[in-house]
Image (cartoon, rainbow, N blue to C red):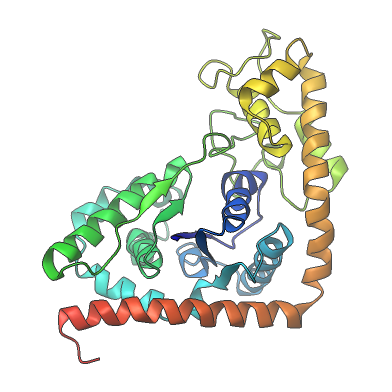
Length: 330
């Protein structure tokens, strides 16, 4: 049995990119009886950027409800809030002592976020990858479903695990990153050379999983494409059309080749409408289930508590193994 671990930050909105690039894959993985799936809301990571407390609390519950609404099954997977499992913070501190400042300075995300938040370059922002390493290593993780932008974090996790193992023996399982062939990186609808981001200031660039159908269609109709009117999957030279084809392939459960063949000869406007309609129908049951769950707070609290208890039981075993190896009194 393979252990699958991944997490998502409860900040802003859950985008179509989050769903296609992450949560959709999580749902598929939990259906495999050979997988033990553990999924978290990475709320400790979220406060590296200042949050409004009321909005932050609301977002945490909203994201948790949406994870369940899109199909994460608390009977098949462990679904919890990171801050509810104290072992994450404790292991992160211990791993700090086996991580070098130079490694953190070289992390691309630290450089990018420091540029965007120059007035708040805090230690948490620099230490983000160590906490992520703790998240992953606590659960003896085999595979971590991630987007391309997170591969560097998987590499530093592996480096830290190997460093500890070389010193103390086989303490941590060394994880592998997993990137799906299609949909790993959904691009902005207004700038298809950039990733779809929940923090994008242009609302037309991003599809929220909770957008109304008419809003979704309007955004797809405004999607940036190109001027040569040819349907082809060529991310380098036809980024906008390739992005639409990638979205369509995932939500309809087809290969890129099948999707291109079906859409060959279409006008760009017709392709945009087809993608919009398919996305609307994909998200419709999630929005309906979300509305039910977000108004069932007692149920959400019970699920989150049970998920945290299950996660803590697993995490504590790993933490004790590491602390014992270092020499702590257990």
